[in-house]
Amino acid sequence: AQSVAQPEDQVNVAEGNPLTVKCTYSVSGNPYLFWYVQYPNRGLQFLLKYITGDNLVKGSYGFEAEFNKSQTSFHLKKPSALVSDSALYFCAVRDLTTSYDKVIFGPGTSLSVIP
Amino acid sequence: DVKVTQSSRYLVKRTGEKVFLECVQDMDHENMFWYRQDPGLGLRLIYFSYDVKMKEKGDIPEGYSVSREKKERFSLILESASTNQTSMYLCASSLVRWDSPLHFGNGTRLTVT
Image (cartoon, helix red, strand yellow):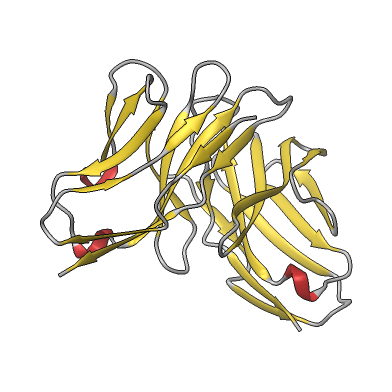
């Protein structure tokens, strides 16, 4: 079965420090991977995606993600965290095994950036 | 920029009422989705539509129905609201491409009393 795991419910980081939000996946075939961010009382916003090509993908707001096929991981990173990055982050994968367009979301990781 | 608009941010309904949640997108996307989001359970797909009048059940369709009479509009219907349908409801749209991200509305927080 296709699945996405985010092993940490909560990540705390000091402002200015690098941040990492972890994601691992299990899919059949090539993965189509996405990261989304959700600010309080808002919908999800697309940050970046990996489809093919370079393993390091750059996205919005200075975020990037590293795809690692051997470890089946797609970790979200940022070199220097801002307080405004505090939000809920979701990793997602497109499920290509179903007859319809299905996106599987991880459970989410709450990021707190401490001033 | 794609805009997905959900008609209500907050709704309070009584048990047994028929509830309509409306969603409109302005980018001519073929796919539209309804998710519900609950603490500890993440996002769960209720229904998906890939074209006008076409729909597919998601993971938790029980107690819900949908309507897509026009390409830009996708409605979620709770035929007889129950307290366990209190939740955040998120609408999304996308192109029919595997690499196309989902674009979400701001959500409707529904409380059924």
